[in-house]
Image (cartoon, rainbow, N blue to C red; front, side):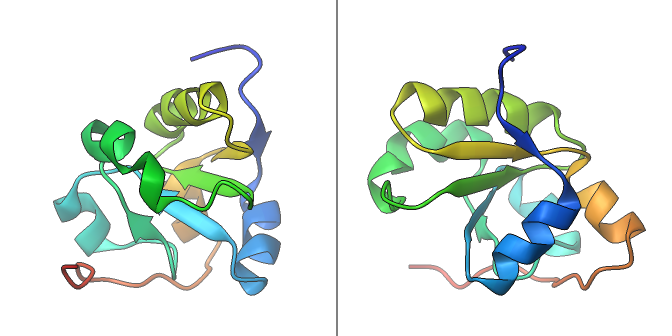
Length: 110
């Protein structure tokens, strides 16, 4: 994790999701299934490098995990690959605490 990791608040994320932002949840499938930001794509941390091609590099990417630690590291990785990426401070836990809607379940398989 870098001191210069681009970060955003959940308030900024909420506005971005209203505009159909690209949100990537880097937690494990079981964590994601328990509750995630609506519309977030599941790409577990360990799979992210092999999935760069699945991410639209022309749009900002918002990275979320449980509390912000994993998303910071993965944001740094995405930025190093040329993505306009941002770590969500407080992660899904902060999203839930804010009273915003949460989806449950796993995404359909490709």
